[in-house]
Length: 85
Image (cartoon, rainbow, N blue to C red; front, side, top):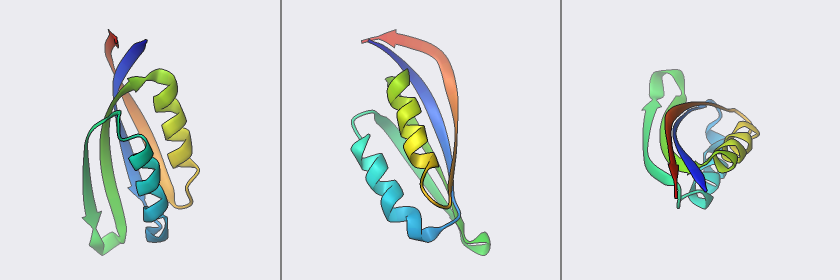
């Protein structure tokens, strides 16, 4: 199975969506390498970076789930590194 490394940049503008976002990320926990969240209190948003090593379809599905959460925006950057695990 081909796996790719990607970085998802997530902006949370609706703090009521945080619990739902954390649940979705928890469900993908086996693929997540690391995660960093930065609250920007003055603007009332949070910026989260998630590094993931997973098959392309898993990454795409995860981005779709996150993008469907109210008040949450996600963009993904993919590495050209592809592994067969």
